[in-house]
Length: 79
Image 1 (cartoon, rainbow, N blue to C red):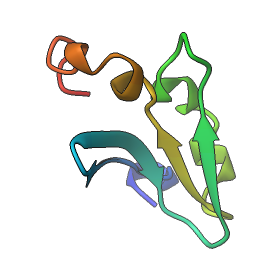
Image 2: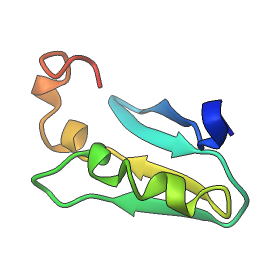
Image 3: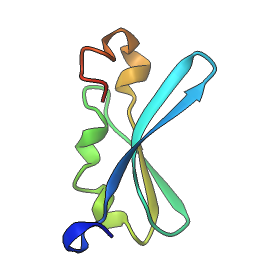
């Protein structure tokens, strides 16, 4: 738990071949829950849900925006 008893979100990056996968992780117990957003959103659409599922679950929100529009990675501030 982070400050004031809140679950702390931490960004993560995973290099897979020539791709960079980005997301947010909320630490918790197993089993893990993976949250996928709609095509017009990004991983931040889960910012209020992730902490509610954690600490009962390890929660991962994968950001498909980098998969769909990799040419905009740097423009978006390096999410």
